[in-house]
Length: 283
Image (cartoon, rainbow, N blue to C red; front, top):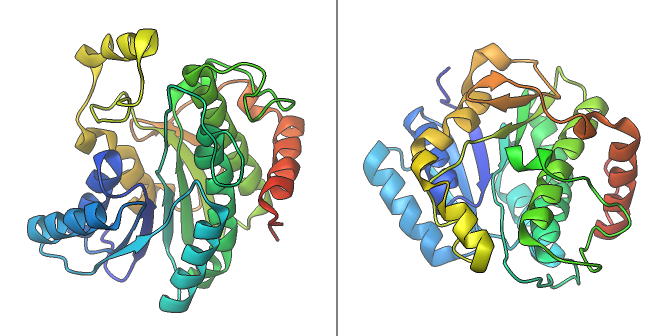
């Protein structure tokens, strides 16, 4: 499927999987919005993508998913500048060795990976609906299978382990995707999620100690960012998934997610808590 006349917005787009995804879609002719926390790095990525693809329909906009105020300002700017949005790729993700907090007082991993994604997606729903046939894609991870979601401690205050906080946030991504798919009209907007593979990026640079060593042990099995981007590109562009919604993909194919991820009561509870935390009610 050629992406001419299709607009794509990616978070975490200035490096790694995000930049590789943006480049692949730009190569197919899409207009791409790089949503980045660092404008300088975003502009550098833009120049590289334009040079590599010959597609100059690439914009860079500032957003910090660790700040609800930044997300709201970003969504307002996107809504002001664009008439529609065909594809939203929630690609941004973070891993922190030590527990830190967002500007809104949330534990950073859950705040960025889930709550920020929840709010941004909701704020862009009208633009996505204006497309008539839009797609929402959220990058999760097989790490979602490793941990339960503790609804009584989403902020990881009781105890903190980076891998657990990350795994819980990735489970939240899938619960959110499945619940969102149930609430959307699939003929207008679909919602799917994916595991990109174990990708060779700087993602774990904030880890130290045993968790850094554990991640390093996976290096022989890691894949390049371009290969990790393949499933995101597939879900954004392939006619084979037109109308497909509420699914989890690995290597461009549907795959089973954990039993916990299909817990509708848990998904509903997370949804309500997410609306309370973000102060935004999805219509």
